[in-house]
Length: 515
Image 1 (cartoon, rainbow, N blue to C red):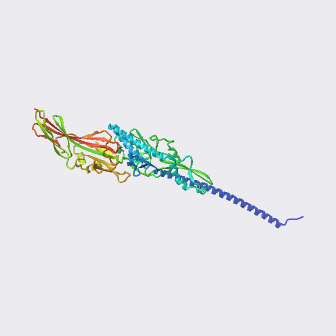
Image 2: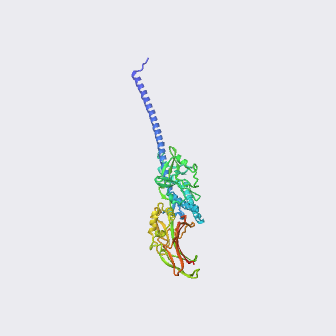
Image 3: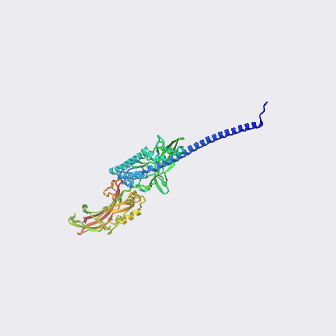
C-alpha cells in the first residue's frame, strides 16, 4: 500500500490556486476591456452627439445671419429707401413697405376729404404693386433651398463630428432642407414712426417699446383698402436660437398670415446628420434672424412747394375791366385809363397795391402780412414734412420760413431734405427758390396729384393797407384786400407731397356817385 507524500499534495493544491487566480485575472481583464470599450463607445457617441448639436446650432445661426445678405434689385421708385447698394433685403424691406404705406395713407386721406383724383389713385396702386413685386422676389430668394443649404453647410461641414469617427462630416438631413417660419408676431419691426406722420383721420396700429412706437410685425396694417405686412425685428436683439416648439407654432402652415401671400420669414430651421464608424446621429436647431438696422418710416426723396401770387382786379361800374399781377412790394398802378361812367363822365383810376409787404420780406412775413388764422395750412405742411423727417415741428417750420427772403420775381419755393450719406437717414430740411440749389434727385416740375382745395381765408381789408383814387371828382372808389390758402395734396409717389398756394387779391372798384 502506497501513501502520498504530504509535500507533494500541497504543491499540487498551490498550482490549482495559481491557475484559478490567473483565470480570474484574465476574466477581470476581459471585463475591464469590454467596459472600457463600452465607456469609450458611450463617450464617443455622446460626445459626437454634442459635437453634432453644437455644429447644427452654429450652422443654423449662420443661416440666420447670412440671410440678411440676400438682396434683390430695388425698383427706381424706391431707390431712396435702398441705400448705396440700390438693393433690397431683410434689413430695409420694411423701409420699402413703410414708404408704400405712407403713399397709400395719403391717398386714403385724400379720398375722405374729396381731393383724390384718378392720378393719385393710380400712384397709390402703383406704389403698392411695385413694393409687393420686390417683396415677392425677395421671398423667392430667401426661401431658395440651394441658398439656405449652402449657408447651413458653410459651418456644418467645417465643424464635423470627429468623435463618431475621423473626418465624419455633418450634412443637411435630406429631404427636409432648411425650413422657414414667422416668429415674434406682434413685436416691433425695425421701423419706428410717429402717429402725427400720417394724415388726419388715418390711424395706424403699432407696438411701443419705451417711448418709441414701432410698426408691428406680421400684424395686418390697412390703408387705402390694402393690407401691409411688416417683418418683426425687435430693436437691440441679436440673431439667436429658439426652441423647436416656438418654430413649429409659427410656420405659415400652422398659423397663416392673412396680410400677405408671401410674408418674409425671420426664422430658420434645419436638421443636421452625421454618419460615422460608430453610427448615424441627427440633430435640429432653429434660429431667428435680425439685421440689427433701425429706420424711421419716411419718404426720403420728397418735397413740398409754396406758391405765392398777388393780383389786382379792376372794376368799373361792377364790371371787371383789367387784371394786373403785382409783386411783393408797394407799387402805384394805373388800372383804369379814361373809361366811361354811367353819369356820362370818365375815370382814370389808380391804386397803391403791395403795401401789405415790407421790403425784403421773408416767406414767413409774407404769409403773415395780412391778419388771419393760418393754423390749417401750417399743419398741412408740417404733417407732410414729417413724412420726410418725423420730428419736424412748427417751430422748425417757422425758423425755416424766416430764413428765406423773397427776392426778385420768384414766387415759388421748395422745401426738401438734404442727407449726409447714401442711407438717406437723418435729413436736414431746407428751403430754396424753385430755381435755387436743389439736390440732383429732386424733380421740381413734378406736380402734386390731388385736387386743390381752400384750407384758410383771410378776412377782407378795406382801403388799408392798399387803397385807390381817381383823377376825376365825383367817383366812388374803394380797395378790398383778401387772401386764400389753397392746398393741393400729393401722395409722395412722384416726390411731391403737396403744394400750398397763397393767392392774395386786391379788388379795386370805381363807380359813379349817385344823384
